[in-house]
Image (tube, rainbow, N blue to C red):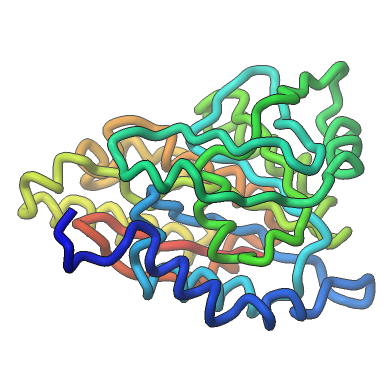
Length: 283
């Protein structure tokens, strides 16, 4: 590393120094509040924590809503059928499912509170027994990276739920099963990436393809056109934007958990390294 380069996760460190006291004092959801929206977040990778605007945008977005009683997150990085859940006890270690980054990223903690009550509620909602719990598997980076910026006090219980498959219909249905949680002050969060192209890193001209896909997604979201979104393999630019499906389909879980698919609002709308980091909330 260049001696003049910022330290790894410097933007995250600066965020903590700036906001931690007020993050702890955020108003919590209560029963007089409306149902929380469902969210889709473009989570990035450890380098998200090096981007001051990205971490600030995530923090401000979370602050625009009451602090949830708990969070259920479905990440692009865990597919297991039937749906399974992570360990829920306080202190379950994070799952550092990445390599090739500075070692510090694998030492950053995000120790969330006990979430066993949420795990029990999820088991009931999923409609099959038993729901397997990977007690030693904590949150993967698709979950903990955005949450570190959104809820830096680490004071909200979190359970990660696996994707049963990459099938759009299965994820829409899973989202619908989770919908009642929103009325209980539980945040339902799908974590992926609006476009996820490695090819664009070496060929910046391919950003026209990721931009075309992003424009297509915005149009379909604005119209609440669930069928078009589920048929994303026919979208413009998809071969570059999503050569594999796992980073797009968590959006379908978010839509399934929503009451009004046409009510999507882009909370973050920016291109980073040729990819769209668009993140949306839907009532």
